[in-house]
Image 1 (cartoon, rainbow, N blue to C red):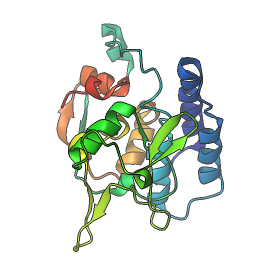
Image 2 (image 1 turned 120 degrees about the vertical axis):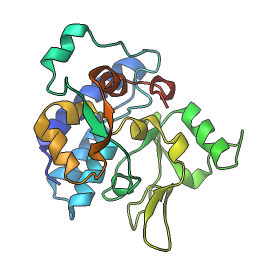
Image 3 (image 1 turned 90 degrees about the vertical axis):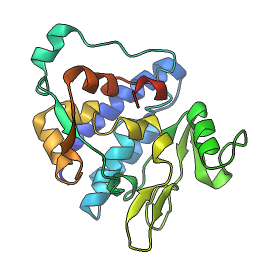
Length: 222
């Protein structure tokens, strides 16, 4: 998958600044890892796809925790290239859950929700399922395959998210991220490797903006 590194870096930097202002989290480490991952060359196209998925919305779930997203103004729709709406329906292909190293950030509330879903109510996640990144928390990944800790592979080789109904906000808002909505080109680049984009369910401008600006799990309708 092709992606402009400059666009990705600027998106990470923008969100990193929000994190620093809102919670005092050091975002430089996430930016350095993103630059190293993309700048040094990624072995496969899917590796790049995963890097974008995990890094482009740095500290997505922990930043702006006290700020509710605002609804877009009516005149904003006429200025956006996606004003007429977009299509997306997740096929659970698992392609965005594996590949190059990165982060899938989770809030304390999301950890509790995931723990209850996997049969550990009130106990949190097991230690090998998460890691600290500064003051934030990220799900872990298999160091050999790059698979998210909750990505399971069937005997037929299909990749499935085992916590899909309670997946983190970072995952729930894909692909309606600011980095992919900057231009039609960015969106189409991602769509080449995401089989659910430009197909299936239709989202109007307001529905897209709700997802793009979401800051908490409950901000996104089921």
